[in-house]
Length: 129
Image 1 (cartoon, helix red, strand yellow):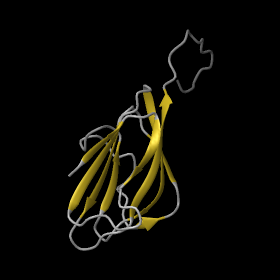
Image 2 (cartoon, one colour):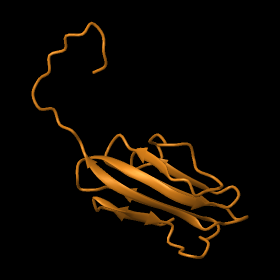
Image 3 (tube, rainbow, N blue to C red):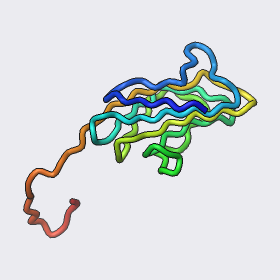
Image 4 (cartoon, rainbow, N blue to C red):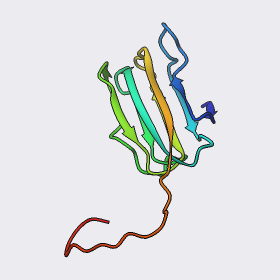
């Protein structure tokens, strides 16, 4: 399927079908790779997927990376917020040949990583670093 590279620090990713349904028997992929080094915040605004179709969002630029969330199926208009652990995210829409839906709509924003800046003295007996 098609692979689209998104390299802005913020943007919108959709399946591209607009008011129509996406295509049967297709796999489309979008790599989000903003220039600001850090992590990516994603808001999945809504999705409407046909029976057996999936929307997968990976914490990295290949399907060998972990999913940020279980695969999305069915439909929802409730916004889902996700955050990657590194700068690249892969979004994959997989459609079978039985039924299609209206697709999906998400936004993303690059979040610059907090860098180490000096030292901190820890004095508690326990804690989280």
